[in-house]
Length: 452
Image (cartoon, rainbow, N blue to C red; front, side, top):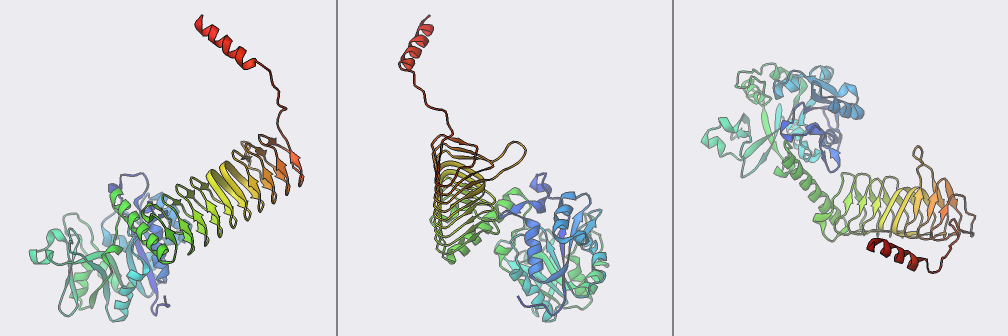
């Protein structure tokens, strides 16, 4: 996106209480695609070149403050106290924009589906001469949305709330999104004239449309697809926004050459990266931080987070890759295998019932079923390293810190507590003893007791 000719700032309204969410988590911190809704809105502002970005929060919204401050700094916070409507919320950002000279974008923190591409037409309208540009959308079922009343010359003359609209206005399919752009000076001048003479005693942002018209200013509407406006006010709407995100990402990945045999069953995160030529089987979950290279196959019912799967690797079914897992080319991580913070070398295999936590597995090594990296002593984590082409026998417990040298073997059922030299065989188990006839005598004794 080219650099804007006029400086841009953004005010994000995040002071709503979100009572309809019925959740202890603030509304704007609920996640879509594994990311807080407000982060999607900040992303859009940054992609549009907005600087500064001011987030208006409610008094006492400590969790939202902490989240925004961690990303943008304390200077990005403005507090609306008490909450007296959307116009009053924008006024709360006035001091934070005191030294700014340029266009101000007003956006809503609960609209994660609205991206930079959908907002850019607002700035285009400003460059074309509009003093105030309002973003709208058209829908055959406008319902309770405010209607955009547009004159024949393109002037947006009013925004009429549905409950106050005439039958003719209710028939209008152009609806208000609540997103708009205006120069800082004009914006706060209009807001100073907004009154609270209404049933709620609140200052409404939409009133500036009428005020701008009375001042002879050019007010224009720009439009984006209806699908971009997925404001979230309830858990049901959050689910709809998530579904819309998932559908977009799945389609984009398939368009790029990723094979998904049942795409509706695959759950993606905002930063999931899957290369063309990879195959994703049904019922796979990608939490944040996953990269899949070309030719890899992720089999059904696997869960991946914070990991990388390199070219040609085979994962699952029923595998779990946790943060720090780095699965090498053509490696196999099979059913009911969990990997955490382990680098698995090229062609290595751990095909069944295994936990690999903290360490490394060398290229070509084989990890037998039931193997455990015993990495935690109740206080600290320690590493386990298995060398290239080593063979770890089934049901081995490798007690970290420990290493198994290249080409070495561990006997099945061993508890390995000391380093194993390359090409050696390590046995860490008791010598087998046998008592002839013991089982028959044991059964006879138990039956006799039961009969008594």
